[in-house]
Image (cartoon, rainbow, N blue to C red):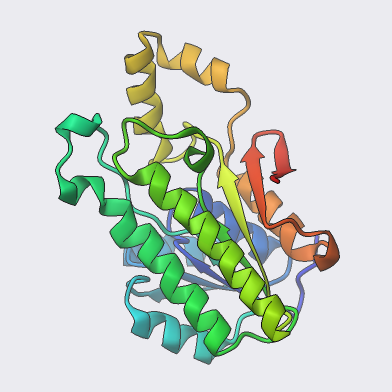
Length: 248
């Protein structure tokens, strides 16, 4: 329960959904949590839920944000969970601007923070987790460039881990790919869209995809990853309501 006492966890994208659950789980496990997001109201509500949570209102895609927060807090744990809501429409109804939303936000954010984590660098023994998506494995035909962006997040997390090991930095970096879930404001519209595309009810679609990932279960999974033996870490994991599964 208190496995992270004395640790500092910085969660980028902590104001809602899975990121909020991850921040709360780190706090409940004893860590001092730095919660980063642009929504000041949501961050204040999150901070009020636990005395160990410090809000930082900032734009995660601004390189100055990564520079200043990593230097100030030198976290033992860095969770990159932030991401934009994709535009839900088939390919021929997208514009380049809507198609590339997640490249400009999600990939950009991961690139900036991973680069700074290696250059600073974070302390030996630090853990970095990049939240990708199950869409990186299965595709996402109603979400424009979302699946490709999430696959790239997985790739660059792997590249960063390789560079850490080559340089002997002692930082472990892994990616987590959660399955589509109706339990977040990002996932619920996608569930509705794909149910309509399949010609079935949302309830039937949810039944077919199985036990959903929730903010609480995502938090448990992230605590599991940052407390396990680094020798046993994989470069990437899928995450369902049943838990983590290592990916080849």
